[in-house]
Structure formats: C-alpha cells, structure tokens
Image (cartoon, rainbow over all chains, first blue to last red):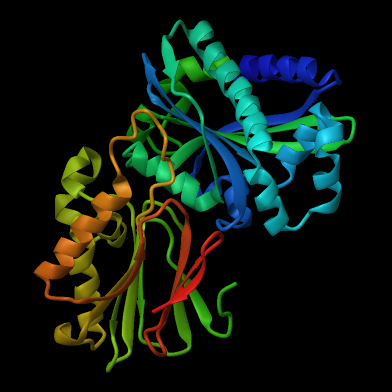
Length: 206
Length: 175
C-alpha cells in the first residue's frame, strides 16, 4: 500500500507541477462503523470512486473524498478554471452542483483512477498477483449508503473492512481522502483474528 | 434534518430494535441497497425497525452455521428472509396484535450503477424477498419509498406510526 500511495503521490505531483507530501497514512482492519469518515456522520455527502477487481485476489477498492477535497485538488491543477466556483460556493448544496459538473467529475475520476491503479499495481507487483480492476464508477451520496452498498455487492458477511487514511499535503493546505479496501476473502475473518497472517500480500505492501 | 423532539434509538446495519414508548423514535441512517423495514401496531402503539442487509441467509455459509441461533437479533435482522418473523415475535411480546400490524419500507437502491459486472441488484432482491415474507405473514405494506440510485435515512415515530424518509438529492417524504 505504501508503494502504491507513493507512486500516486509522484503522479499527482507531476500532474500539478507542485510539491505533494504524504503527511500521514494509516492502515488497519476496522469495523464498518469505525471507518473514520463514517464516524462523523453516516449521512455526510461524499464523492467516491469505486472499482471492483478480479484475478488472483478479488475485492473492491473505494476512494472517498471528503467534502471540499476534490475542489482543492482540482484547484491545484486548473486554478483559473475552478477559481470562481471554489471561492464562492462552499455550501453543501453548491458543492453538490459543482460536483456534478462534467469537468470536475472527469478530473476526480481520473485522479481516483491514478490513486487506485497505483495501489493495485503495487500490490500486484510486490506480491506477484494478477489483478484486473474494473473502470471506476463515481458516486455522490451519503457515505454510509455507499459503504453498505459496496459491502452488500461483495456479499460480505464480514462486519469489518480494511481502511487506509491518507493525507496529502499541498502548498495551500492539507486534504484528506480515505481508501477503503474490501478483499473478497475478508469475510472469513473478524478484527483480531490474525488479519496480517491471512493477508501476507497486503502486509508486504503496507 | 429529522425531528429531534423525541428520544432517538439508532438502528445500525443489520440491527433490529423496537419500542412502545411514545416519546421514542427509531431511526436508521444512510440506507443504500439495504432496506429499512418498520412494523407498527397503531392501536397498541408498538413499533419496530430493522436495517436489512442481504436477501437470503442460506447463501451465506458463515451465518448459516448459526442456524440454531437465529434468535440472535443481529443474524435475524441481517437477512430479508429471516427478519419478519423475528420482528413480529418481538412486537407481539410487547402487546401488538398480528392482525393490526402494518409495514413500511425505504431503501433498496442501486448506487453502483455502471459497473460492468454489477449484474446482481441487491436492493431489488432485498425488496422482493421482504415483500414475499410480509405477504406470507399477512402484513400489509402501507407505505414505501424504495429503489432509485440514492441513499435514504428513515425514521419511525412511535407516537403515531408516521415514517419520515430523507434523502440528500430527493428531499423528504412522509407516509
């Protein structure tokens, strides 16, 4: 995971032409209700990129952008284009309208694609796995609704997921997004049941 | 967003709760493909709510090993094919009459539209199984806000059996 995040950081830095730092990152197996962004409020509206992957390992990968994170990231790339909206519309309703904009959605999808591909490629390379991700799907809705739908789609009988919090540092401030990884076979274990031992491919990447 | 002049009992994922206190309200947040199910007896003013996760308990080997423990609330509430008998039994214990029970539902959405392999619509499956189970138990569905591609929060007021459904993109509905 570390290698994947680092790879994504380099790509974003090249894309923006600005220095990007990984300020912190954590990775742990947590109960669904323990996902940090979900603890604040399950009704919080977030923009999420969602992909499934198949191959030697199956599962789902989500990148949840905190409200405002996508706009800030967009500003780093095209300050002129996004300047007006970003500086005048800060209400949730306005953010919703902005988030629906084709260009911003396209940008966020591409950004999520970079991050997601970097992580999955790093896992595959490091552990010698073949992983085939689906094209990303963008969803703007309540964070709790997104997460429970993803778990249901994976037919997971687990009540826990693997979550990574990543904070990227830009010149204008820090922005947070969260990476939620749900391996298919995760449903066989619960927190405290030897997670690392069950997933050497993941521990070797983290 | 939702009425706060009552004591809120939060029903989490795969949970079921019930009440006969008129100053209490059951609420479940951010339903996606899951379904919020309420049963209410308008005379006894007894009501319950479940946050149903998946359609069939038989499809899940880990939980099916717990067949003898289906009284367990979490397991019963998790699946559409086991939640109705469990919730009915709890409401009857609190003084409700089977013949007076009314059902309302919300949720069952499909948020992950567009995936190449999203051939399985969990929300619709949940809905179909729940509707069949309610029909088998002779409980009428008197209100529902289901389907679509958006999340919902559902709240049941024990005082009058009213259900309020809130979504960020489609406003508030009451029934």
